[in-house]
Image (cartoon, rainbow, N blue to C red):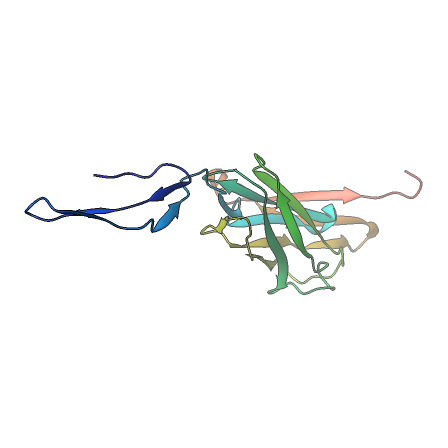
Length: 181
């Protein structure tokens, strides 16, 4: 049985039951070289907290890292809207030969309004250089609301879910800002 090697030309030879042969012209160039990889978000949900000011989103490259590839990323409104809750973000990530993780930041707006927790959609599109999109070509940011404490306008409070192995309780996170500090 014939097999292909990287960048070789495949030819075929037909043999009849009587032993007659006929060779065909070269029919294809086979490139069995390295794979450019699969690009996707590193997780289904990223957590964002208004008081942090931004969320870092990680895009992974797996299944190969040969050659330079690019992928376009963008945010899209869901229950969170731009510019009230976050700043719309888009761009292109370029992975060089051998590179596999890349990231971008999504700026968040500390609005101090009670809007509840909201989500921002994330989308990857248009991979180049032989790369493909993986199953996590879409993801989301779960944005936890932060609100001012009524008696202290310089203090913010945010409630966010406790890790599942702690009975689903909620943690409170308080941050205070002082002038000149």
